[in-house]
Image 1 (cartoon, rainbow, N blue to C red):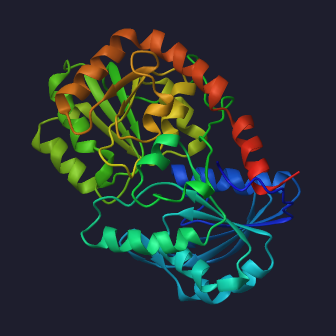
Image 2: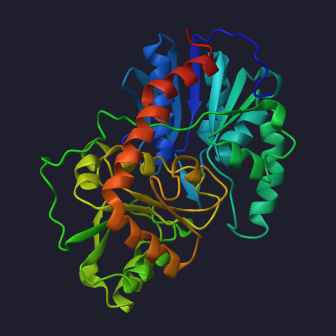
Image 3: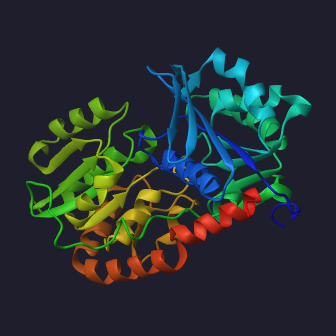
Length: 373
């Protein structure tokens, strides 16, 4: 059974995430969509988030956004001011939505003790193979933090079933698949295309981090015809390593790295490419909303089998191909197949997003979850 089924009415929602708009990323998009849906339905919606250089309060899309200047300790923000002020923010909220993983937010939530409002944890992914024993210690801490939540939301049944952190918490888990805006992301062959210097274009969108499998994607290029190239949109801590690998393999002319592209301009890049690839190698890739954006634009997609949401939406041989993680040869073969059958896969992908992963369905699920009427 998913959740306790108890009807509640929420008038004030406090969301806690690492970062927020205009910072781009899958977690940030979900955080913003939930916060703005609460505001659209008449609730007082506040987001607490972190920034390495700025702090202060703004209003974005009807949402009050409070940013705390933070030091980054690895991927985790650290702000003592956030811990000092969290109790006053929580006291004004009916419901807290905590986006996991975020160790500081989880610690602050536990420190609230009996003063905690109803809490929903949106579980974005396991911390996997970060640094032993850091991940194991964090798992132990996480279980304590998650047990203090009323509801834990995962994006696919397979992720909930396979998570070492979520074991024995089935009584509080609900599944809400992610979604995308099918009006913003749609096939537009008349769109003004960006200049891309190779005829057949493979696209990746995301953070340059170790679980994304960018080394596998770049390596797979050697097994594809020379008119194929990769567009890597995004940035992150592994950018230098990606550039070094590209140069070492002599693929400089076949790898384009335009940096971070604003979400409002991404559809133009999807429509300029022929295949979208999410080559992730670890369960840290719990879903991949960028894949839905690509499917909505009519692109065939290649994902990897991780036991997560990446194969919830991508049906092998229907909307694209599914490859084993970390396998350059298999990834290249999957990309080659999508280049041949892209139109057929792309049509099926667009239809799948319209039927199962559109924003109205996601917003309805979130409204019901939060008790917004």
